[in-house]
Amino acid sequence: MGRIPDETGPCGIFCGACPSYGKSCLGCGSEERNQRRKSKWGCKIRKCCFEDKNLNFCIDCEEFPCQLLENKLRNSHPCEARFKYRHEIYDNLEGIKEIGVENWVEEQKNRFKCPKCNGRVMWYAYKCKECEFEYSP
Image 1 (spheres, one colour):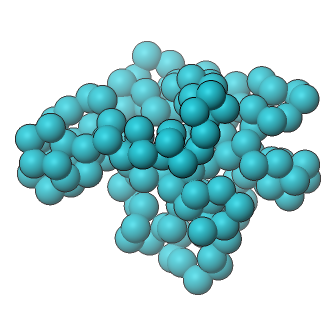
Image 2: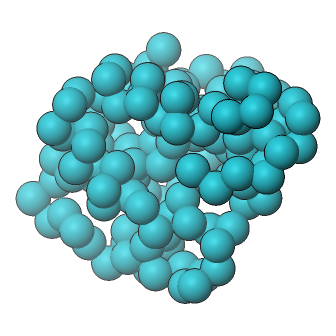
């Protein structure tokens, strides 16, 4: 684990529901450079939070909410259900602040657990990885 739980992004996204998590990516919180997915190293939000400001989460920043979060995530793909996870980042960050990141991660793991087989539900399709049951948490 890096500075925050691996399956957590500084922006409030739960990486544990990403289709790449555990396969080609170890999550935004991971500092492990030996992974196939390299896009997170160029993420402006991650760089701003971790490298430029030495913060764990965007909500800890005096500039929160900022245009970077608004433009890159919260306002991207409006009204598209498959990007619902991006539109929830402020609620997620508030949850992290209120209940603590470890409790929030457990809450998200349960939220993205398939009610049919207990498999992992992924965003974009909001479909269980194991049984393909469609479920929108």
